[in-house]
Length: 163
Image (cartoon, rainbow, N blue to C red):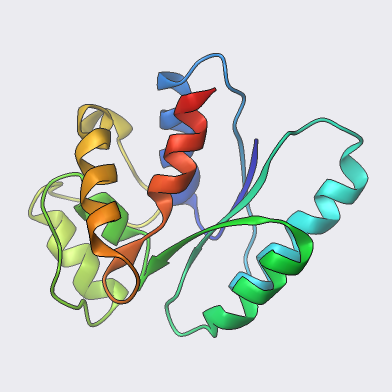
């Protein structure tokens, strides 16, 4: 599985997840850009891959982006999409608690996460703090549906863990 991520936090999470889910191969690649640009990048990587990966994913945040463009691009290029709204930190929060009230910004999400992970900063993540809580995060994320807050990371996690 190849996962194109919008940041180092997402990459660190996937690197930790793959250690739990042997023998699946998960390669996380960080690419800066809008969600739609990441989808196009993943599609180009698949075109030049020659059979190295079975699945291609993009892990993206809504932030201030037009996520509808990324969703349409993903559907047309058959790239799987894991969207967190407003940001990836929502997925991390779900490891510790339910989260149903809207989150105003990525900064507010990071502040909420720091209640459980003191010292948390973007780009740094100790997956060991989350490893035993992945099942709860999946359960909580499934219960949320779309909107703010939400995260589709549970879909990617389930694919990784099935292999």
